[in-house]
Length: 238
Ligand SMILES: C[S@@+](CC[C@H](N)C(=O)[O-])C[C@H]1O[C@@H](n2cnc3c(N)ncnc32)[C@H](O)[C@@H]1O
Image (cartoon, rainbow, N blue to C red; front, top):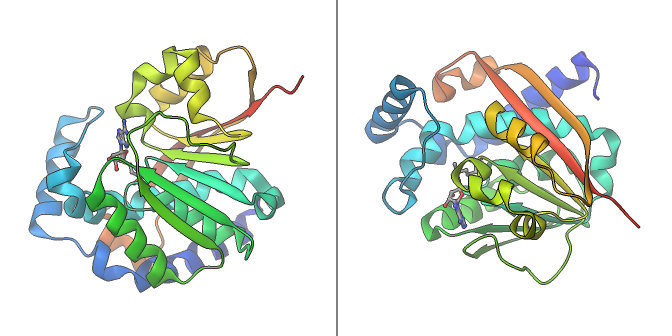
């Protein structure tokens, strides 16, 4: 885990990267309406990304990326060693961006997968504007599905909440995990992953934290604090 002052510095530096991409994140009428509707319902939502990818990114993109950054600090310095990384349900690239920022690894090969073409184009644009070290490729894929290789690390933020059945099916769950898996999601989803973890996997760490949104981002994020829940899973080697 990073020390608090180091963590604050990471968040402030990361805010600069997010602001570099501010044209993707600036709130719009649609994003404010979406945010207000979601907050008034107070339930796990499944969005229609064909029509609302842009509004989703403006409403939740920065917030999700900050949460992913916080969860990634639990990997400590090991973050620099993952080479093949897959972002499952990458959406508009919240987790990919946070990972690439913290890893600072020119050998990184990050592969984002998502069913929604509109989300993938936002991911591509985000990563090209952010100019972080590594190679990035984004591909349309309906998941879970075999992806042809075993990533060193699979990332997933707010994908399991839209595909909860995968948690309860060991064969499908297996398809979502590289050598390791780091999930950011609602606390209830993290509880279910912990409780139903199939044989052959083990919990490497489970974390909850509150983050303070950097002052420079509050106009985009529309809140000053956010809570994050994550779980780090590993395969049990024979
Ligand atoms: C709540 S968004 C999260 C996006 C991003 N990871 C983030 O944290 O901002 C969920 C994403 O998963 C994608 N998704 C949901 N179910 C999927 C499936 N079965 N196959 C592929 N993509 C899926 C959606 O298109 C959407 O982009």
